[in-house]
Image (cartoon, rainbow, N blue to C red; front, side, top):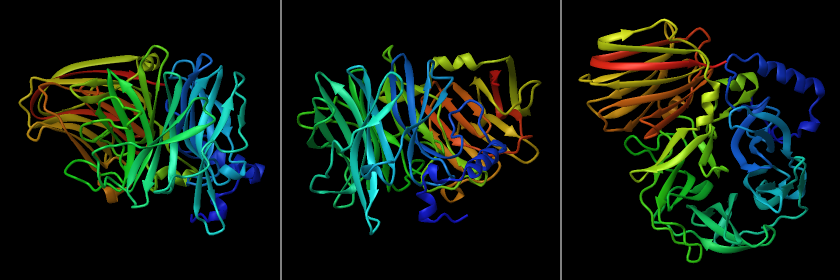
Length: 489
């Protein structure tokens, strides 16, 4: 279906009641609906927004176009949870209902202040020539989850030297002052991030552009997020327009980080190392983090990418969010691991331990479409070894370790319905290790794999048939392994 601009910018209130009902039924019938991930009831989900802890609960919003699986008029949809595992749909959080967000309530963040939750976001507008004019807007939520938007933007103009690609404020507090980093594009058409400061979240002063050593690094930096961890500064962002290099940067747009000294908010400097991808899989973008009440830094990302068609489009919906991940730093690298709360999802447990010697083996009870599995491979002299999962007569998704190249490889060539094949069907990440651990979360149409306790992470959507449920362990050579699997309901 070709969506016209008029169709993309319809409000949900403009849809006929039977249209919404029919769309819900169409989505509900889709064989690729997830079982333990946040997903939209209808339409398209994209960036996680406003991730926060407030009034005894985690709050997580996401970009939402309700009337179809396309990028159109964006709302903020609100979910909440007491445990980061079981999420309750609250409903629409922010509507694009004013002049300053007339063409979409775009991405932003949240922070608690004086007993309320302040939501800072980009309002998107278009003029009669369809030219973009962004505004940074503010909405405030009370303890009853009632949200009130301010009538006027808190940042109404763009500084000289930057284009209208100016969005996605991420706010934090340092001392008595609030700071917000915003993704931007210079007039020279290259990406960067800028900093603002405020004493009250209402009046903001432009501080300038963050100084980095990344020159000509993409044409736009989306979804920046600055935080400090283990006495170091971390800047996450999503640079658009990066060319592939060896095993890196093969998705349409990238998501990654720089790690270095803490940001000096006065001179805007943050000496740092190289840019690293956050995730080596096919479908990961626009991550956002919070600091949990116990001090953990927790990340959630969009399990999808812009400008890519997905098989669920034909069923009236698209995309989901990743599982929450705890961040840490190990050997100068940002490490992601599933939050411990996810263990509450574990059902019946199965165990197996065996020796593989040029084998491919299956085991009773090792199959399924929604499960968690931890598998250790060690004492190997094999050239490669790994796991085929969501496998059937023809279909299979493969995670393996290529010992000769010292690379972890995710292959979705035969995973089922194809996705973005123009960008390849194999992803690789270098890993030199004597033991290999795959910690996998497989859902109906996705997989998240944490390798060696988060040394690398591979996040991907997969779209196999419902009867492709086998799990097979294989080795080209000799290796010993053990695996533990928990079924999820």
